Image (cartoon, rainbow, N blue to C red; front, side):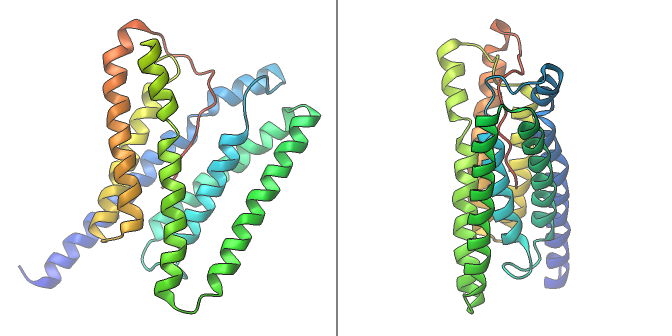
Length: 235
């Protein structure tokens, strides 16, 4: 087989993995809907926290910026998944702000403005770097760190599952979506030889497998409950 043929197969494989990752990401983006249905129904945010959605927005914005041609070439599917994810987070944050009490509303607005300010600093700061390789490394490292912290966030849920021997706060479809999206973008990054994509998603894949194993091990002793605010990851 010619080098051109091998390259074409790799490109098709990369695109297929990226499209699959975008599709599976919808499972993550839609996972907080039960929480927000409850908030709307009760007209109150109760004890739910809006912090995960603000943090997820920052993650999506950084990864979206990394996927643009100004930072890394041929990563359109990274841009699309994080654009969609960012829109979902903005919708969730808006609903939270509508139903939150005044003190929490002010605090959430402050966090949102801080996140947008941080992103603007990253965007403007990275554009000041003339060397494209250095610019990519700067944004890539931020993107990688953000993704790893997002994928590591379910560790407290894993600890809770082991301690309580219950999967009440670890919904199956959320864990499955995390695993499928992570492995899709792990393969996407591997084929394109992009360390900043395959390293964090490789970690996400491992954590997704752990969650699925724990779910099937403990599911007989618990009933799923969606009251827990869900953390959403992109890319």
